[in-house]
Image (cartoon, rainbow, N blue to C red; front, side):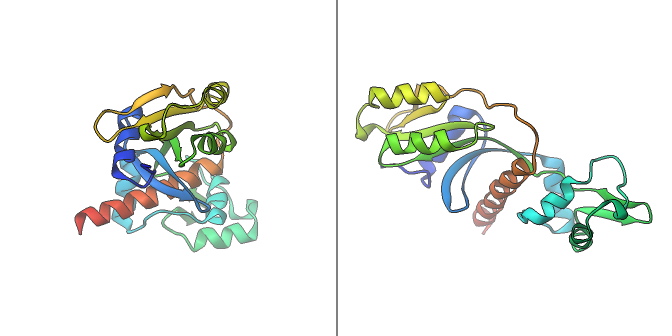
Length: 207
C-alpha cells in the first residue's frame, strides 16, 4: 500500500491540486497537505531567525491583534501580554500597545488521508473539518472502490485518488471545494504545522 509518507503519494497530491505538498501530523494523525507558501512572511522569518510558530497560546494572543493598528496592552489579558512580550518576532510593543508583525507562513489548501482500508480513510476524511478540501488516497492493488464507499465520499465531498506505481494518479471521485467558514486561529495553527514540515524537508534537501 502506498501511504501518505511516500514521495509518490506527495507527488500525486501535488499533481491533482497543482500545489506543493508536505506530509505532516495534526495531534498524531498523519496526513498530506497541499501547502501554499507565502513568500513575504517566509522571508521575514528567515531574516529574524524564526521557524514555525506552533504554540496555540501565542497564536490566540496574536489573533487578538488585527493588522494595521496598535492594541493597547490594557485591552489584552495579562497572560497574553506576557506571551506577546516573550515573542518579539511576532509583534512590536510601544507605548501605544502591540502591533502585530505576524502573518501565517502559508495557506493549507487541501488534506489527504491514506489507509489500507479505503472505507476507513473516507471515514477519517468525513470527520475532518470541511474548511479544507479533503482527499483519500488508495492503491490500485486494493481493487476498485466499493460502491457504498464511493457514494459516501460523493455525499460528503471527499475526493478519492487511486495511486499506481506506473501511471498517473486517477481521480475516481472529485473533491468538493472547501467551505469558506469563519476565519479562525485553527487555520493559522494547521498552516504552521505544515510549514514546520516544509522547513524540515527543506533542511534535509540542503544537508
